[in-house]
Length: 546
Image (tube, rainbow, N blue to C red; front, side):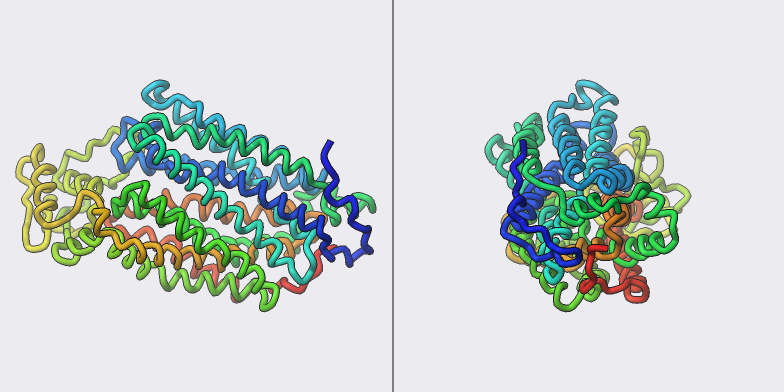
């Protein structure tokens, strides 16, 4: 039987219950702690995308395998809106607490099962099918979790501190990512890279069963929120939350404004600053995976307090100006920040790009897109295909010119196609001679500067993400709040944000420009800034009892 953590909380009159007691603060802390563990489960996969691409997507070229791994990661995001509909409806019909427990069990069980899966070498195509199935279950569970946690915390918070209180929920995604980083780093250090790549990657997934036990115990201590309890007692609970939320224009209009005027920008800034930056370091700049994880972990540790700061600030100056300022700054600074990241993390690559830029000369009709969805294209039929395949595999950025048969200029040197069978080898030797590195040299990485750049990216994340939960809760009436706020949040974060790494890397592979994928978040954040400025209402002084 669960302990009643709010049993000594006096019953407050309608509209005045948001005077937080000590026990209500304990409930908020417990709710946030449980959410940290759920995010830990979800983001383990993203951190291990490189390893998982080798384990579950063998048989295709490296670029395609990694994009497949990112696509499987994104599959969990694709179903989040459906989880929001299913569990949001349950949360508005039967309450917040029980919905927590169901989503927690699904999330934790699915994560544990990933650690038991056979790999491609053992089970063939069945392995990635099972992996994607478990990712889908995780996405459904997470789709129902966030809206409930944010709603639950907001409905316990004082009216004048709702941004501050809900910002603790906003820290949980980063804290969960940080926790998973620490576990991955610790396991890698303990086992060594060879053992980790072979079987040690399973340990962080299997260890999640311990976190599942703690999380379930924490959630069992919670009582229902006072707002929902009062609605249930007065018979004001919605009997058709989906209909009220999405088939009535007054509420649907707010859902759409919340999605495109706030959440889409927040989502792309979040995933660019915390995931795309990590993948960019590893796959594009060829920084060792362990080093990249440590640098990201330091930046997250430095940046996490700012979620709470911007939540607190939003209680004073409003949610809207902070969120939109973050979107605007992201759209302006992403290109210079990622250029600076290249200079700091792989100066040899930056120097080679400056001294010996690479251009492929070929008729576009003879060039394939450097993404192989079925793993059968060897990219060896034309000079263009061989050249672009070699450059993509080496992580070398290049420009394209339409006249030629696939010749490549590297600075002042020009490599002719000649015999196709030996072209890739000759091109690789020319790249090495021009100073293009096979990987980032650890001794030359300017680690303080890398951390500073990553911190700047995380700081933008905290601006858009810290106040967003408070705003979403305040936009919708309590009887359909769980359902209404969950859908735009998970459409934005699940689809626009979750697909960002895979889409951005596919854009890079298709063009040869290592920065081209940044157009995705830059354009999305700029659009959100414009739409939010015109349409998004301010909510920070609104009462949420209605």
